[in-house]
Length: 67
Image 1 (cartoon, rainbow, N blue to C red):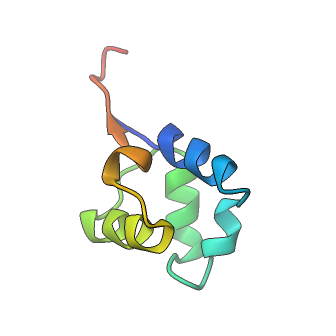
Image 2 (cartoon, rainbow, N blue to C red; image 1 turned 180 degrees about the vertical axis):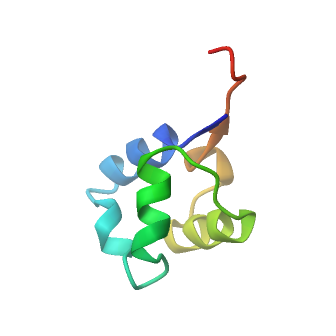
C-alpha cells in the first residue's frame, strides 16, 4: 500500500499545503488520490520530489497491506 504521510510531514516542515501544488505540478484529481493514499504514477512522485527538492523517502513510503 502507498502511504503519503511523509509528504504531508514534508509539506508541514516547509510550511506548505498540498493545494499550493495544484495546477502548478498537480491536477486536482491527483491531489485527491494522494489525500486518499491511492496509487499515482511514479512520474508524479518524481515531479513532487523535484518541486520540493527532496528525496523520494520524504514523499512516499510503501507499507505492507497487512498494516
